[in-house]
Length: 265
Image (cartoon, rainbow, N blue to C red; front, side):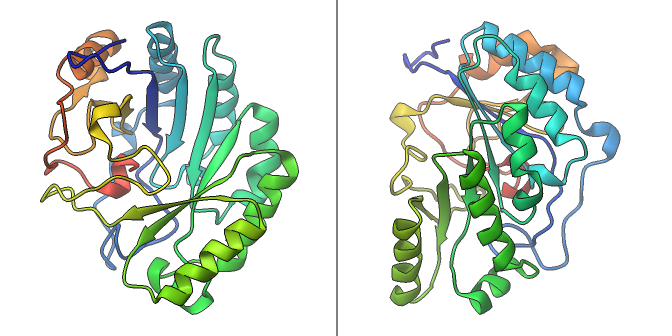
C-alpha cells in the first residue's frame, strides 16, 4: 500500500490496551488518567480480523503496544492468532519489561519474534523515580528471559531526559555488555508537535514513515502527530485503512486528540 507521497505503508502498530502497570513521569500524571471503558476497547476477534485485512493489503510487520500489552488478559492468545496470519513476516511487542519474565517463553511459543523494552536508566533509585512504581530487577529478569527463549534482537528504548552523563554511559555499557540494541528517544510533546528522529532508529523520520496505527478503541491513525483517526467500528476496517493511508500527511504536526499512554508511541 502506497500513500500519496509514494511511501510504502507496510507496518502496523496495534495498541491493545490503554492500561499500564507503571506511571512514568513523561507519559502520564501521578494521579493517573481517564481510562477507556471496557466496551470501547477492541476485542481480540476485532483486532485479528483487522490485521488479516491489513496484511492482505500489504502490511508485513506488526508491533503490539499499549499502554502495557502484557497487562491485557489473554495477550498470548492474541499473539498466537496474529502469528498464524499468512503473509505476516514480523511480529513484535513493545513492553516495559515488568511482566516479561513471566510471559517470555509463552510469547515465543505463540509466535512472537522479538521485543522492544522500555528502559531509561539502570540506576535503581532513578528508575523508581521515573516510573513511580517500577522494579528495575524485573526488567533485568525480563531481558534475560527474552534472550534465553530467543525473542531477539532485543531493542532498548530509552527516553532522554535530564539524567547525568554518567547514567547514560552506564546504560550504554549495560546494553553493549548484554548485546542489546540501544535507541535514544528525545522527549516529545503531542500537543505542541515537538518530536525528532530517534537515535539509532527510524522513528521521527517523516520522509521514510511506513506505518499506521490501530488504537485500542478502533481508531486507525495515519500519523502519531496528527488528529486524524478513522474508527473501524463506524466505518469498517477497509474504509478506515483506505482513509488513513489516503490522508497520511507528509509530516507530523501535532496531536490534541490522544496521549502517549493510549497511542503506543
